[in-house]
Length: 207
Image (cartoon, rainbow, N blue to C red):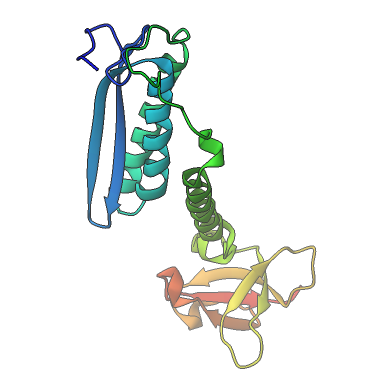
């Protein structure tokens, strides 16, 4: 087949065609690689290239500190370009004997979508665990007075904040720098968890 004209598909010679840029990202832990496919393609050939490139990107683009964010951009950019390709008319007058390329299976039927789903589900699980996994660690120590607490199980140390509507062991009266600074109505004293980054004392009273 002769080299197609500037307005024809560079893969099959059909019209109409448009210039597209699809980016394929490969994450390599610390670094990443981007391969850009810049061609003039018809709807069928453009869709085939989009599906192949996007599938590879969805499978291989997440694996790196910076690659993850670059891949998000590439996936979105590829999708936007694919909408222009989809808007083209039915290709005709192809110069390639076999005609335009077969677009192949839809993207949702390929492995890349499944891999991306697993990656994003894992990310959401990590975010949810970090946000809700241990509510106590996210309480401002200065907001402890008035909160109800439960003592740690036998053999462990520390206190955990609980809802006052459920059974609890004590109420925080005050938070002080020294154990001896607790007010007279405090019946017990508990040193705050060092994981909070605070070594003050919680003055406790039963209600």
